[in-house]
Length: 447
Image 1 (cartoon, rainbow, N blue to C red):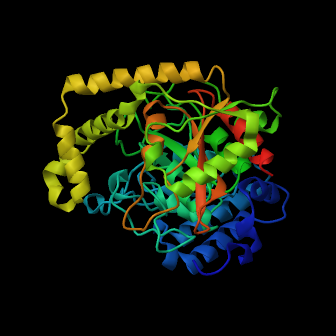
Image 2: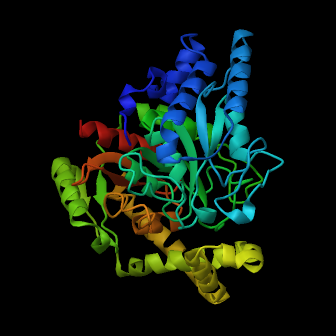
């Protein structure tokens, strides 16, 4: 992408935390912040293609309303005036939601998804809808990687990751069924967070696979990621997989030093051979730097089938959830998606239930492992972003998605072409705040 984001208007470089504080202090207005984002988009969107739907007039109207509330002394939420991008599988009442397919062209939801309503309550300005791959699976959209326009930004949350990386917005929301948050974050060089399964409401979001789908977030620093996560992790009874838990208080726990120096398990996983040599070399150097604070841990042979177990669950659910789309418009679906749906149609109920039971076994073993460690360190992707004809390989995310464990992509490494190379940090299910604290320790230990 031509042009250095560092040379853009100052307000586009504000973190979300700093921007919200500046608005509260009267140093900038929400209108100025949103206008700066729109100016940035006008300059770089033709190259990057991060946005599926934008309504600049509507965004500015919402920003002016936020400024008027502020002038009247009305209570401001933690994201008051901060622009946010929303993946285009998440319903918005004032913008289309087309899910990256012509089969949903012109679709206008009546209501906001729960996550969008929560963002508005927190004062955020929904700037627009970011590009998703076709129905949140593999067929790429128009988005390009801001670091190299001939490479993929990853998928399926491609537009969300690219918009944050290109300084168009400080925050964006995406989703992950396989590797759709962690992989694009790694390719685009931003922080990405997939929380524990069932921590952010999916009400009003396209269903790909109920046992796997998880909403998550992108930002350019950990504090912003924590702020957005704390805002969104609120119980919603309309999502059947949520439990009535209090917000985890990630920001506060992350800010506190660990009571003892964290212990990290380096887990190569059964897909280690898919990692490029440059990735293996980068992790060797990282492990040497961490020294005794990290230990190599190999998973038992049961995990050799983890990729196939995840695939079976996902494809069976695609066949169920996309049955009408397949029946009415199969010729308008990509060949890859048709093949996945047809494969899912052949899955037997005994196979599907057996796969879910196997995932339960994985979870029990990993919970036991994480009694001795604060987090697992593993690659976020096989290497640097590949060519944009593909969205890359999600294999390094599949196991953690299947088990519903929280995962962070940390932009702390660099590949041989000078492009971002993500490290993935994974914690026990429910240990989201501890994961952030360990991540902060890791990032600071690297200087």
